[in-house]
Structures are given as C-alpha cells and as structure tokens.
Length: 483
Image 1: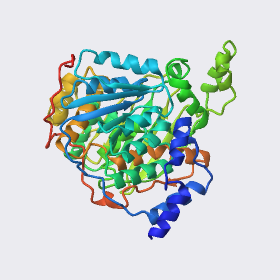
Image 2: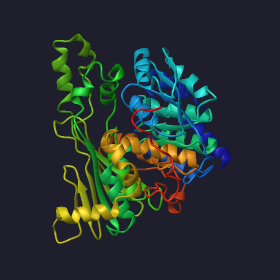
Image 3: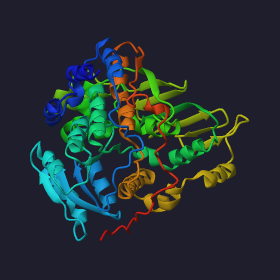
Image 4: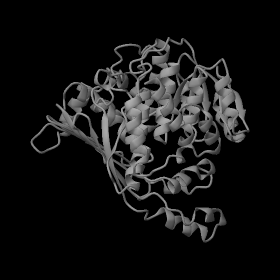
C-alpha cells in the first residue's frame, strides 16, 4: 500500500513542492489540471483507494499560543482589512507585511503608526513572501493574494512550521486540495480558510437553529454568490494585473463557491456526519464579459489582449448530492446587473428559512412565513453566544460584522489551544467545487465524484465550530484605536 501511495503521489505531482513554487510565482498554478473525460475521475478513484489518513486534523487542538505573532501576504483588498481587525485583538502582534507592490505594503502599514504593532515591510520581488514564511518570529500567516496562489503559498507556510489562514478558495485544482491535506496532516499545522460568510448574522442564527433541531432533518439547501463584479473586473487599478478578469478567461464552472457553500456545509455537518458525494454543473454562455472587453478595446488599447477570449458564462448552477441523500443547489453569477444575492435557503422536515433577497424569513408550516413578531422571538431564542458577545462591536468591521468575528475567534482558539472553526478538510471539500464544477461543465454536465478528504473519518468526526463559546471566548477586543 505504501509503495502504491508513493507512486500515486509522484504521478499526480504531490510528492514535491517544485510545481507549486514555479506556478505560484507565475500566477497560474490553478490552470494546470487537464479536463479530459477520464482524467480527473480516474485520479479521484485511484487516490480514494490509496488514501490513508496520516493524522486526523478534524478536532485537532494545537498547543496554545499566548501571543499570536502574525504575518500577512497580500495587501491589496482583503489583507488590510484583516490587518486592521487583528490590530484590535488582544494577544496579537503583527510582525510582517508582504506585498509585491511596495506602495501597497507601505500604505497598508500606515494605520498601525503609533500603535503597539511595528511590522517589517517585505516587498519588491516575486519570491519575497517566502522570506516572511521563513522567519522564526511568526506563528500564523494570513494569505490574501489572488486565489490561484493560495495553495502553493499555504503549503510553503505549513512546511515552515506556521499555521495558515487563507482567503477563499484555498485551492483551484484537485491536486492542490490533496497537497494541502497531505501537508497539514504531516506537519500538524492548521489551515483555516477565511470564509467569513459563515459568521454573518443569519448563517449563525440558522446554524444554531439547525443544531437545536428547529428544522428537523435538513433535506435540501439553496446557496449562491450572485453579485455583479463587472465594474471591479474591468477597473485597471482594482485587481492586481487584472487577475480576476484573466481567471474568467481561463476557467469554467463555479470559480468562487465558498461564500454560498460554507454556511450550508456547516448546517449540514459536512465532514462531520455527512459528506459531499458527487456533483453536476450547468453553465450559461457568456452574454456580457466578451462584449464589454470589445467595447472598451475599441477606444483603449489596454483592453485589446482581453478581446476574443472564451469567457466563463454568466450563471453557473451546480447541484451536489451528499452521502446521506441530501441535496444542495449552488449558484455563481458574477456578471448580471442584479443586487448582491447570497441565497441561503434551508429546507427541513419541520421548518425552513430563506435569506436574500431580504428580509430574512422563517417558516414552521402552514404555507406561510412567520410574522415579524414571531421571527424576532425565534431570533432571540437562537442567536448564538458568539454573536451576542461581539455582534454589536463587530457590525462595523465589514460584511455584516463577519470580518471581525472570524478574526477574533481564530485568535481566541489559537490562544486557548482549541480546534478551529474550519479545518483542512473543509478547505479542501469546499474548494474542490472549483475544478470539479469546471470538469462537469466541460464534459456536457456529466456527474463527477467528490473526493472524501477525510478518508472515511467524516462518519465519526465531531462538530468544531463552537458558536456558543462552550470553551474559550476569553480574548478581548480593544477599542477602535489600538494601543
């Protein structure tokens, strides 16, 4: 078995880090996976037969860290937000900030002037992020670069003895998902994906309701991330090197699944009593991106390289079946001119809930939504402790308060030596939708199996998102002026 496993790792490119180091610097690690009808399914089947779990990271509690020393890689959009939240949390030292673009790195540091944080700036070269990972005064590295770089960087972080918190998704290929799992189990370092939508008020409320049996058996969920990014994607100065637009030109399928899927996976106890089994994915053609590129290129040569590309379609709809026979409908539409819509629909044997478009609604039967008064009563009963503790303070932190909540609880768990809210198996399973939905779209919407990254342990793994703070919860959050 061990010999077969070594051969398989060599075959899939998981045996070493060379492929990641080169591809990450070029920025196209997520483009290497072949999409032939048999290729990925064959690899998934072979890996499932050879997979043995080195160490179960579900429920793993690393030794407590009294002061969590942090380095941040990527200071474009999300990096500064995490930095400013972390600057207000007890037991945190921000030690290093890293970005390829010097101006961004120095601009990000400015809010930390006259505070207890004095991070070193690392910038100016494609590999400078590796120096941050090699430092011996950092415990946690936050990775907020373009998502196709996440896996390679996260592997490097764990190989150098640090925990890693990465923006979403954590990986863009099945090989990257396996590499992340293998590395986390071998190094016993946490990898937590920073899926902040799990910490929004309604997902937290409905998660607590589900865990307390309000919905009965949850049989189906709808989820989505449908919000137009056309303005951002065609803005010359918003995303470094126009990277998001380049991704739409290179990928099909749902390339940003976790905002919708994360809360649903928590509600369904995915990897902890159930798991994703297979999916099918259908995608419309592109009605807008190519036309916009042509329109802009007519008067601006900058956009000429973006003309004539086979862009991802407007709407991707992916259906997932779980091992316990439940279903999920997951959508992603980043182009159509509609309001932000992160659908969260929960349908059970005793009740249901729905959010987006607002207002949020709850139903207990009789073909009607509960009255506003009844909704408030349910909300009062089921709002979890984590939101009661920090919800009011967090609401100004962005994304409905979820940005501060996820940062605070990550730090609190590390300081108290507790399991994190999301583990490596969540990161792999949720991120795997990217390449698997692409394979399905490219193969006439055929179904494809979703790997069991837990090697069967999903049947006995326990819940690990402690929204009621049964342990820990002791870390303070300072006022908005850190010091």
